[in-house]
Length: 286
Figure 1 (cartoon, rainbow, N blue to C red):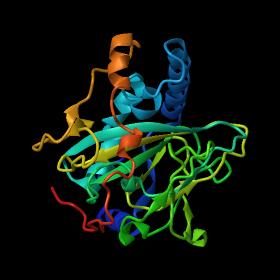
Figure 2: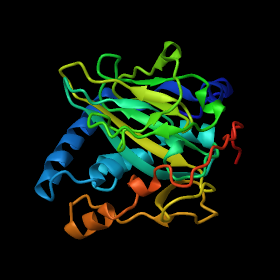
Figure 3: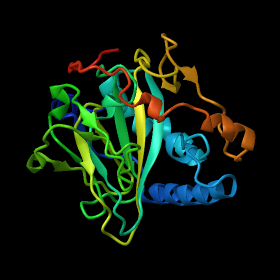
Figure 4: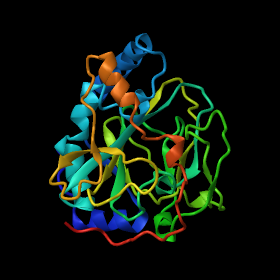
């Protein structure tokens, strides 16, 4: 069972902007989660086709994901980086079907999340199946989170899994990229200012990743309406976010409508009012 990260691993995270691999789920737990995702997708199709909540707040309709977001095996290493007070701000699946062209372009998360860009957040990316160079594992540019937020441009490419096909409008030296290969059940951590991307799935199997976006409660929404978040550890002494709707594990239409109305990941958040600011690079303390 993972516990707090040692000082050397925390230092590596702040130096590189990422850390992997961390063992979290047993293989049988990862397989159970994979099956739960498939069942939920099939059920979602019966209550309204392709619905956004499956990809912007999957912990609310899927019980197994809901349990994972507060699992100590995930939160212990997150706490080592963020400190004892932790909120889940968002979650989402990145699913690449077999032999498809879907990819994720080089980008920085904090450039379009609509949050202030202090270093009080991270993404825990859970490999629900193996993530390999062949099926589109993430790639990171070490240390790129220390260079500040850069301009992006929208491409609107259909096969780009980012909603607007947003891509860094600066040259990226891909020769420096590190591939975050993970076995099913392992996770990686990465900073929101890190340059990262992933390529297409060239294999015969689905590649399923679950991105869990954790923040410290002192972060704020700086564009768009006030967003939702859930306290998963410690205290929220700030009240900057609205409480999440009740889960809809039974796919109750009324609660699904509340989940679907959450503003997260809408175009209103992308780039609006975000200035070119250099983020803080010092590890936050409690």
